[in-house]
View: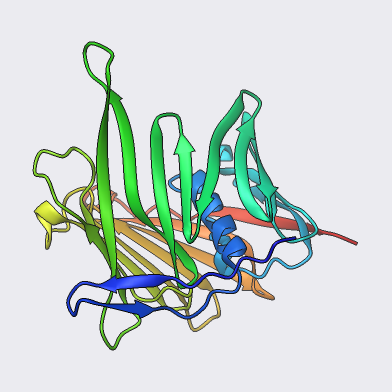
Length: 285
């Protein structure tokens, strides 16, 4: 088995020098987290990077109110997630040299992963997402999208991002390079409070064109922290609405998730009861 040890260099735009992040000993785990986020973002809320899932073989999630949120997550003996079964689908993740290699389902290949030094390239059809390892996170640095015109000719639109570290701070900022006003791709400035998955963690995204406004799309605020009761909290605010996720924990594993939605009920209407998801675990012997 190959051992990948990477040193990530970040260009500091303001002072024009190169600064090195601390050596990352486990980029394979960072890539596994990236693969999980790629497949589950905007569908399921289960941030595995914050949970201790040692020796877990299978996790069964059950949501009585919304069965579409049910899933079965499976791991191998090395602790790598290998499949995610959902209503009507089952996605498999294969590995090569201990790194995520390919997403497949019953229809065939969905996406594949390629590696070049400290960069992961995720390819889906004519689109590519490029990520660079910063600390313990793979952050997006480039998005290439193929789009056919009326004649069927494929045109390529590229959105490139620079990563810069804030002086005397754990913060890292990603922002667009060579902004083109007519570019239809997102132009987000994203600020990470740290790159180690350390709590509390905040991730703030703003569209360059609408920076400072919170009542539109392409603006989000993510907060990860633990409350006084030891619950793991994930708050996600977007377009003036907040989704509040409370994971009840035991031994650093979630037993249940209570999800509530704020700002979406009509004036005078009572707030809906939280939506509950429960988790059951099976382990390797």
